Length: 220
Image 1: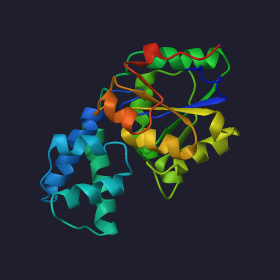
Image 2: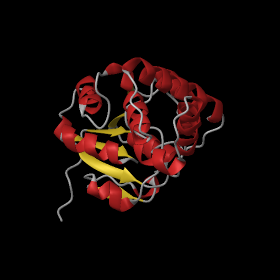
Image 3: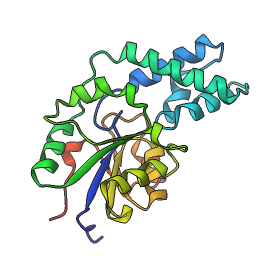
């Protein structure tokens, strides 16, 4: 297979891609469902991590045989964020994350973080990356439809002033891969912090699947 052209910009998911926060996310969602009397398990919640929180609330409830309205979905999503913050006190950067971001900065490659998480939920994860400067962030509050819709990634490309077809998106979930495909970007899957396996990422459209970001390479 020919190597892809060098991208004009690279977008990264945050939770599970750059920072090891997925277990805390899963625990928070199981806990909030329990608070609302909605049966849920870690195995059932794990594949849904990465989609819009309100959608996750509705789909988690539907899996338990309940329908919830938009107001309750919003409340559950908000509460899951609070429970996540309680659990996400000392997150760690995933292997290769700091090094790859520093390398891109040194080489003058434009990069940004595009995450479904609300802006108020990302502070601890960003601190774990120990970046020398505040990164560009596009979060789920900026768009009506979060991943797996392409809106978030397309907005990030517009803000960076680049053609989506010249962007790569690096993520850990099937929703990341589907959003990247829908946006016309090159999807790169990373397993180190993922809740799904390589086959699931490939089936969702991943062009490459890496064990860790240590294996991430740019074309010459």
